[in-house]
Amino acid sequence: MLRFSESVSFDKLLARFDIQGSIAHAKMLAKTGIISKTECSRIVAGLAKILKKIESGEFQWDTSLEDVHMNIEQALTMDVPEAAKLHTARSRNDQVATDMRLFFKYACGEVEKKLEKLLRVLVDFADANKKIYIAGYTHLQRAQPVSAAHHILAWVEMFARDVERIRFAAEAANVSPLGSGAIAGTTLPIDRLETARLLGFVDSESGDPVVTGNSMDAVADRDLFLEFAFACATIGVHLSRVSEDIIIWNTSEFAFVSLPDTFTTGSSLMPQKKNPDSFELMRGKSARLIGNLQTLFTLVKGLPLTYNRDLQEDKPPIFDSFAQVCVCLDVLAECVKKIKFRKDKCDAAVSDPLLLATDLADYFVMRGVPFRKAHHYVGEIVALSERKKTPIDKLDDADIFAICDKADESWRSVFNLDRAFAMREKIGMPGAKQIEAQIAAWRGTFKKSK
Ligand code: ARG
Image (cartoon, rainbow, N blue to C red):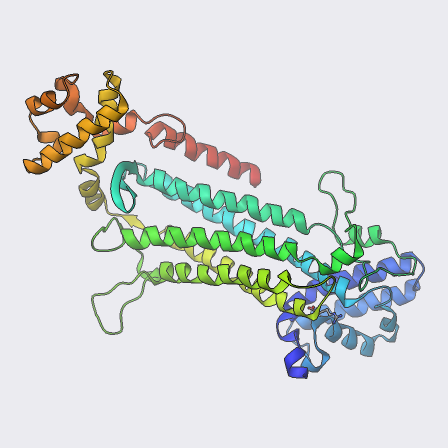
């Protein structure tokens, strides 16, 4: 049972938050006169000593003491007898809820920093590849021309939404459950606002302390775990989709990019191989991040209020999501810096005149042809080009005029990439000025966030 029920092997990660929480709790107990000032300072000094020991790796964790809370309290009491009063008006239920909220505030801050670093790298990557034109795909079929920068800025949008999601989780974490006790608070004259203030659970604008409003919900609630895991799973999905783009671009069939040796591996059998392992791993790890969210949903869905020991299982998926998201974001940011576009291959793909078939339909529309009809004409023109084994832009004027009598010699001018991009200068489109404006706008938001 000891081996089965222990959690210290993973929740020791909470040590510094547990100690932070205990210090605030002790100070509050002294302020309200529940313990003496001397008792408080002995406890606080003892906790600081233990934190040092933990950080230097000297602390002896004991699985028979179950969890991080009991390990620290036990060690403290051996050193400072007054610590027998520390757990006054507190339960491990509100204690672990507090520790986790402190953890989430920290973890969200870390993920946000890493996301912002990635955004900066991606915007620089877009800036460096404004002149690279590639085929854009729908259904993985060549669709329309875009610049590499436009594609990369689409990734930027995805990760920028992740920043919003992670900030939302950080905001949701910013509420103190301490003082809720095991389920129904305490009869002792504690001051919940004081511990909230000491722990930084304060409104970012007013500076007022923020505490949970119901002691039962405070110890039973795991919404924040779901929100954090969801934010991480969504980052995972984004990492996976970006990875898939890069893996496809890196195939011999596409060959739009070449990847840095440091982020690829060879095959143990086939000497010619250079595999995009870093991206495959990111795609794979996203499964874990999604799985962790699923684990948490399954964990809480059938639980009666309030605390049940099942909830001890809430930590491994959270710690795993945090660790995996962090390492993935680091790897992507470092790797992207060294990806090179292969202009010759991109040019070969983007010069396919069929990418501009829609532009030809638009050309007819501008001459008064209803779009459905224009679409149909271009379909006929494409079919004719296949029949004649002639690229669409090399067909005779007469062929085109026979299909659409609204066309004149200018129809062929549609098949020019500079024109195609110049005509896409509305907000959100891949025109060069738009891309410049987007890059500048993103850089403006980075300056603010610094
Ligand atoms: N290690 C426990 C957890 O993570 C702490 C709370 C234990 N509370 C209890 N009443 N057994 O859930």
